Amino acid sequence: MEQQYQPGQVTEILIYPGSSSFFPGQTPFGIYDEDYRFSEDAPKMALWCARRLGYPIQNIELIDENFYACFEEATSEYSAQVNQFNIRNDLYSLKGRPSGTNYSQKLVEGTILPHLVQISDAYGTLVGVGGNTEIKKTKITLTAGQQVYDLDTLISVVSESGNRIDISRVYFEATPAINRFFDPYSVSGQGTLNLIDEFGFGSYSPAAQFVLMPVFEDLLRIQHIEFNDQIRKSAHTFNIIDNKLTIFPRPTTTTISTKPNLYIDYFVRNDFITNSTSVKSDVVADYSNVGYDFITYDSINDVGKQWIRKYTLALVKEMLGAIREKYSNIPIPGAEISLDGAALRSEAQTEKDNLMTQLRETLEELSRKVQFENRANEAKQQQEMLQKVPLAIYIG
Image: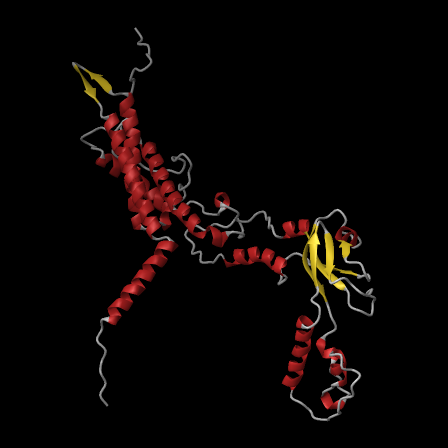
């Protein structure tokens, strides 16, 4: 009579035979199948894990492909942890770089200065020392007796109707001081006629003299005229409320083309927002598209490979524990065999956590911040040691 299969019934248990050969395609993802060093180590890894689990004294209910899958996962996990650390260290240096470049195991040395400069451009626009937004200019023709001027009407004249604008500067360009006293064709490089007239003494006739004075004399006179305008004359100022520009003091004459005007520097708010925000595609933007690919197994040093071996063993224990826990009791003639699936899984989880903690702590000790702190402490200790060195006394 043919025996029917019953759910939960163990029909056949596959046992590791003690040796294996690796061929491309035997790992789930095939990430390292073409890596010759990975291909060489895969069978050795399977045998080492089996022996660490008790083979040949104890049967191992796994096949070679189970070992290879754990080996691939451990290598990928090591690569992922190292790359995550490097992304945190290098993200600001790599922002804006091509996103299609692989930066794994490449030295990345940079600074966040380009980003600071880009941010400062927006401030440069506001303070008038650069920036990437055009500062536009318009002028107001002052009318005698009119003190309040509507900015909405003035700005709309220069094709900015409907756009919000920000005023950055309101100023009055007076005649340069040098034009108010210097005449190269009068009294040999120094003129006093215009100067006296500016100070309100034009009705007096000064004595003419023909002395060529040094340049600093001209500079002092220019400065004197400018200070006189600022301190002794009426101060010009303004106030802006509800887009109404109020001029102080009240204009007494109407400005014409031959006389200075009141100028306004402004920029369009939408242009400022657009120019102050950089949006680029196909470049490194954030954590998700930094080009850190899986590290090739062959290029990992022996320290990393030892971590991979231990993590592979922990994964194998976890897999074997899951299998044995499913078939916790195997009937044999006259008795039953109890398997240690739960204990293996618990042990595997503890080993995985310890290995991950160890790797992360090691990587954090190598971060730029910690390295700078260590160098600073080292320099401080060296200074303290040098201070204790006795100084030689020289006797001539």
